[in-house]
Length: 113
Image 1 (spheres, rainbow, N blue to C red):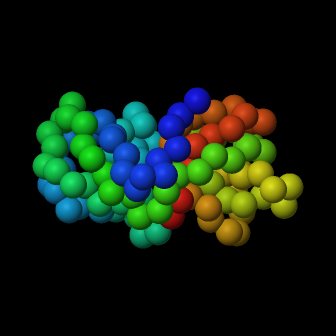
Image 2: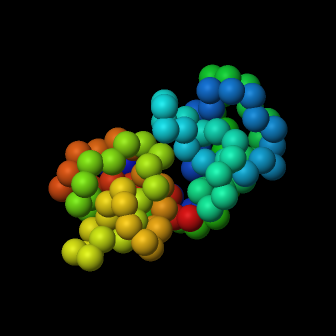
């Protein structure tokens, strides 16, 4: 199982060059950190300059949490609160984004946004 980031920081692999102090999120294609280009999905701020293949330290906007999935999710999918107390990839109230790809009825780490 993944680590819950209660200390406010996460180390993420980056697949491109990103400058320190950029707002970042997770890539849906390869589960790496990327510059955030979509409003509302920034998980935090990169603390150091990185090039492709580097691990960067990200100061998270909020700590991560774990939640049970009502539906299959892919890494970096937006996740929403479900009527059953679980999370799904569709809904009205956004909780955060998935840290990893996970099947239905399993637990996923969520970076809160």
